Length: 264
Image (tube, helix red, strand yellow):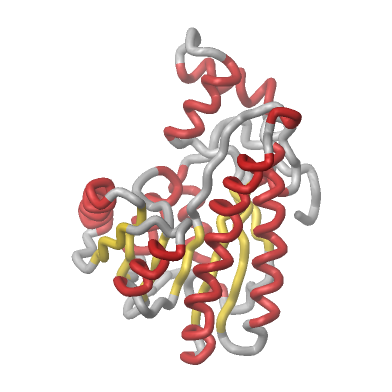
C-alpha cells in the first residue's frame, strides 16, 4: 500500500508540536505541500524546519495565525487560500473539577476546540466541493465517548466534533470530498506529560508515572501505554489519501482500545 499525496496542499492547525507536528511530518512524507500553523511565528518557523528535516520535503508553508479569531483566520486564508486536505487538530485541555468550571471557561474550550474547526471547514469546504476532491479531518479524542470526570468541558467539545464531522460529511455527500473525525486515545505529548504529572505527582520517574496514570486513570486501555504521536499521524495520513475514498462521516478510532465499545 503506497500513499501518494503529491500535488495536494494540506493544512494542520496547531502543528508546532505534539500530534499536530507528527501529522504534518506524515503528510509531507506522503508528498503533500504542508502548511504548518500556530500562533507564534518563531515556533511555526522552527516546526516547519523540523518537517523539512524529518520528511525531506522542501515546499513547507509557514502559516502563523491565531485561528481562534476572525482576524487570524483571515490571515491564514490569505496565506493558504486553497486546500485539498484540512486537519483541524488545534485543541486545549486541562484537568479541573466539574463544579469549578465557570461559564467563561466553558466558552473558551468550546471556542477553541469546536468553533475553530467549524470556521475553517466552512471556509475551505466549498472550494473542495467545487474541485471535486478534498479531505477534512477533525482530531477528536476518546474523551468524546468516555467523558473524563476531571475535564468534562474538554470531553463535551470533542463529542461535539463527532457531530460536526458527520454533519459536514452530509453537506459534502456525493462530491468526492470526505469528512471524518479521528478518535485519538491517550497520547504521549509534552502537554500530556504535564497532565499526567498533575494527576500522579512529580516524584516518580516518567515510566513509572506513565504506568500509574494508565492503571489509575485510563485502566480500560488495551494498549496499556500512551500512544505515540506518529501512530495517530499514520491513520490521519491514510484518511487523507485517495485510498480512503469510501470512508466519510465516520469516527475512526486510534485509541489503543480504550473505548470499550464496538462502535464509537
